Image (cartoon, rainbow, N blue to C red):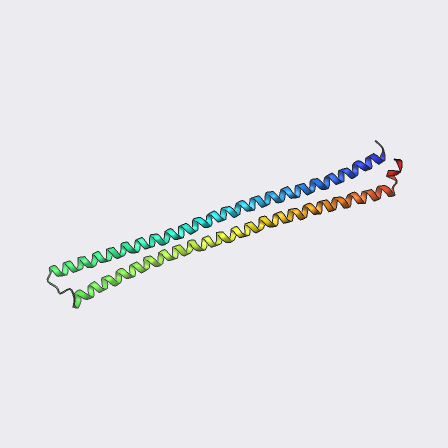
Length: 180
């Protein structure tokens, strides 16, 4: 093999190296983007689950409030029955205050239950919001990975072309092509 042939092989290898480097950059970018898209989907799924938990916490709170209100009504009914059995006037004095206090305490308990349920739901909503933001970040990262891969591939091609061009000029100066 002559010097000119070696020069052509060298140029071809430099060009092939640039193409392989560009393809590698694209494949790495695609792999990174796929991983980021997967993470975004996981975050979206977690956001959906957190939203469902928030709704469930609210519904559970409403059920507990209804149960507490029913329990309070039963307590007041029991108090009224006991006082009536003893011949106490239910609509005045101590009997009325006892019933009123029981109703107020029952209402306070119901409000506490409702507040606790609202706090739990709010916690899940915040968690869902966080997952949604993470999904957006992961989607942006996937898009950035593709852009970076395209730039790296372009850079590899430009660098390879520059290398081939530089070798071409060097070979011409050194008379590699004169033997042909």
